[in-house]
Length: 240
Ligand code: GLU
Image 1 (tube, rainbow, N blue to C red):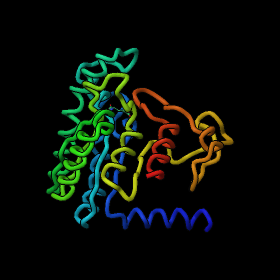
Image 2 (image 1 turned 180 degrees about the vertical axis):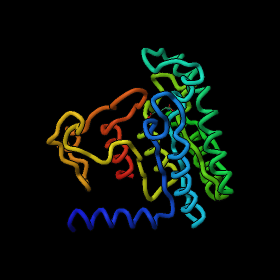
Image 3 (image 1 turned 60 degrees about the vertical axis):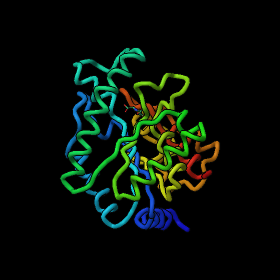
Image 4 (image 1 turned 135 degrees about the vertical axis):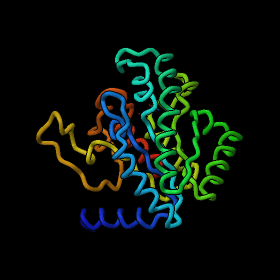
């Protein structure tokens, strides 16, 4: 199959998937100054609404809490201690969830907030409980809105990035597809901002060690992931 028909096949599969997990990165949703891009959010919510009204089950994993919370305090995202990030997440998460809840409510849909730590997905009883809650929300036609529980997740027990968290959630709900939305338009052989010769891959069918070597870390600010964590997420999802 050539690359274009593979992309087309992947898109068609997403359109038909009964259960999807969609992850949104901070840099897409939140401006440098910490304000939420409401137009972008509305466009995303429109797309998800179409899917849900068509009977699809969609889990939304969204970053942005820390950046939004820092704006509330008028602070910059530089040189922050863990406690400052956690306090910012507490201030930001409530506003992020409110923005999503308002946006979905305008379309007659409801979101339910789920904040998890890595432990919640590793300890069997907590994992089963989280899974039951996610599935119940999906059965009700509502949208689980997931983020890491940054306010309590210390370094040792953190996912740290929402790419792998989203992959874990995809495994938990048995999703057919995991979609990682980013401000980078695809996977490149090198960082396209630094290397003009970087080539974009439309389709990658196997995460080989050569592909892994090409992936970079997070670009800027409070974005925790990067292509590395996206590949890890892809591997986790493919493995499941
Ligand atoms: N949980 C963090 C937040 O909401 C984001 C982690 C990430 O960017 O992957 O700010």
